[in-house]
Length: 254
Image (cartoon, rainbow, N blue to C red; front, side, top):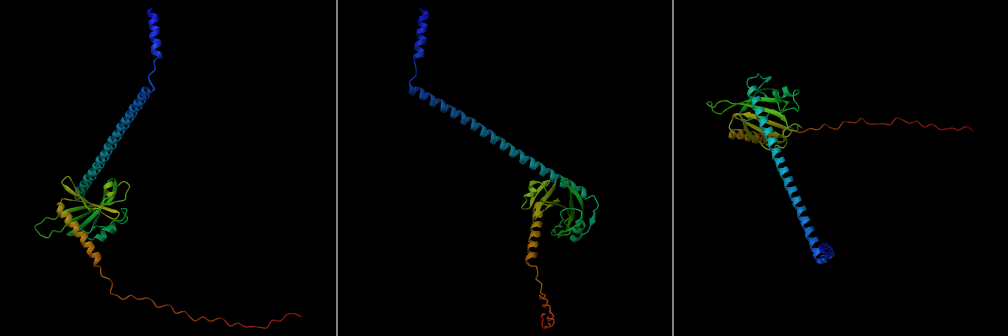
C-alpha cells in the first residue's frame, strides 16, 4: 500500500508542469541575475586596473623624483670637490674656455654670460655617468663688504637618451635644493645648464633675469654696418668676331 502511494505521488509530481508564463519569468530573472554578475565582474576588473595604473603612475613619479634627487646630490658633491681641484683651463675669457672644451666634450658648449660674475676656469667632470664641462665662476658684488661667491655650472646635452625626463622637457628656470646648496637648471636650445651655488633663490633669479634681458637688448640694438654696399661691376667681355670664311667654287667631274 505504501509503495503504491509513493508511486502515485511521484507520478503526480512528474506529471505537474509549471505554466509557460511562470517559466518565462524565471528565465528572465536568471538572465538579469547573470548580467548583474557580469557587470560586477567588469566593475571589479576596472577598479583593479585603475588601482594598477594609479600605483604604477605614482611609482614612476616617485622613481623619477628619486633620480632627480640623486642627480642634484651628485652635482652638489662634484661642485664641492671641484673647488679643491686645479683648473684644467684657467681663464677669465669665455672664448678661451669654449675653445679649450671644443674637442673634449660633445656637443660644443657655449659658456653662459652671467651678470656680475666672471669665469675663473673649467675642467672635465663626470655627471650622470657622462663626461661634461664644468665651469667655475666668481661673483662680483657691488659693495666691497659683500663676500664673493663661487658658482659652478655643468653643461649637459639636453637631447641625450640617458638624460632625465625633466631635462628633456625643461622650458623655464627651475630652482631646487640639495645639501644646503641651490641647484639651478635652465635650457638654451639643445644645451642644459645646471648651476650649483649657495646664493639665495631671489638673487639667482634676478641674475638670470638680467642675463636674459641683456641678451634681448643686445640683439635688438645690434648696430647695422654704416659702410656702403658695393657690387663688383660686370666683367667686360672681349668683342667676339667670327673668323673669315673663304668661298671657293665647286667643280664636278664631267
